[in-house]
Length: 600
Ligand SMILES: Nc1ncnc2c1ncn2[C@@H]1O[C@H](COP(=O)(O)OP(=O)(O)OP(=O)(O)O)[C@@H](O)[C@H]1O
Ligand SMILES: [Mg+2]
Image 1 (cartoon, protein in one colour):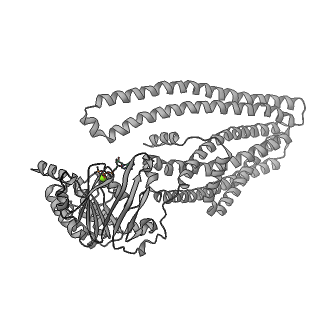
Image 2 (cartoon, rainbow, N blue to C red):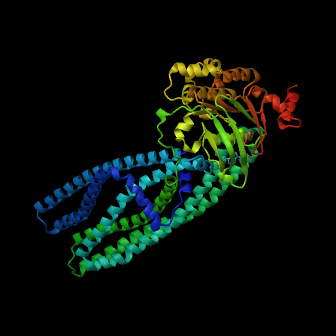
Image 3 (cartoon, rainbow, N blue to C red):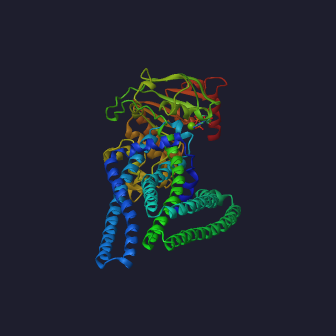
């Protein structure tokens, strides 16, 4: 699983060219570090100290070596002690550097995660209908984790490498400018060739990972839809599909291995070769009576190794920054989306509306499918406390009307009024607090039955929850579970039957006690007996509040004050049950006749 996660991270966070725009966006992320700036400065200070002490170490080593030939015992001991002191200091500085950087990163990351989630969850429905949940999820996990590396490791490394390269070369030049020039002619070239080669190798191994990810998708999909696989007896087909994909991995991986073998050989050759070259020239210079000692040569080699390491590390940094820019763009895309306008958003003091609803020539198309009109100049009104039923064929636009009432989307034309006021003028939280819906597809959260009911009114008292469950005719099945209200419902509620889930959704709506109640096929998954019981409960519940009921089974809405027939996004008929039945050739009359026929 961890493996899989890593693969998909690599796949979903594309590298971006380093552009001014990209860097600017990344620098904007630094505002998340701002609250930690003092700690960050302390961390940088420790970083500086540890880098400098690292640079002193080869110097002392060389001196120590030189004192073998021409130093006194005191000098040898003193240098040894100073060296020890440098190591201890370096150890302490490194410890505090790592710890302070961890503080900065963790706090920054938490803030970034919170800000992103905070923003994400308040985005309008339009945003979610055009994105995949998995993708958004990886924004919050993978991209932010990637930025974590950039902020701590990468930044620290960058600073340290710059210090090492600049400081190291300066010190080298002091020791011997000839040898320095010689070294600079070889080492950076090798480091850069290694870098280009390395990128090529990495690209190959990414291809392998992508293939592995593709094969994992097959496992994922088939295990999630295992009932489909089995019901259609497609095991052999899937086994073949999986085998083909996994076999493809072999070829690509082996091709990669060939190049990787070459790469490693090259690195060894070039690395030891260039070290040997520098040593050779250095020894030559010492031998020719240049002002260098063998201790100097030793210093030189150590600095060269340090510098070479830093140069090749710089190359890694470059690709790390490219990835970080990719991750930043993804996050910024989310953070720059406009959220819904919640208005004052004071949830505690929501004014209760009386619940008069009017739709006035409302037209609508979904933003994701702009060329398909879903609602065409729909008008109807519901008086306070009235029960209105929406009926009509599948796809007519009934559920869409409920989405508009909640302002998940705004109408293209026309307006929706509650208590005579356009719903756009209400505080969004207040508007939604006045309504409750039992949706067509009930999705529960993974917790307990209690938590799921309580969602309608967070902090509700035990008695209220039980009362709501009783009214929803849910008590009986709840009591049949040994753990009662504490029974866990499984991921998305899969451990409950459709009818049980529906009754929990009803209980949740009852607990909310809204002015306007919307039932979208609220009893469709119940057997006739339970449906009758829940229907009775809903009847009592609807008493005194405005309710909009969507139903396919017309028998459940005979008593509605008004029935509105919607077809292809238009209001085709409206009136009471009796009035609509009397319409010669009417849609309702036909539907009614058909359903009686089926029942009979
Ligand atoms: N999120 C969406 N994005 C784009 N189109 C959508 C979306 N939801 C629904 N539609 C389309 O809008 C039309 C109306 O859908 P709606 O869900 O309102 O129908 P309905 O009357 O509730 O049908 P049913 O009785 O089957 O529930 C359909 O043609 C549907 O394909
Ligand atoms: Mg629907």
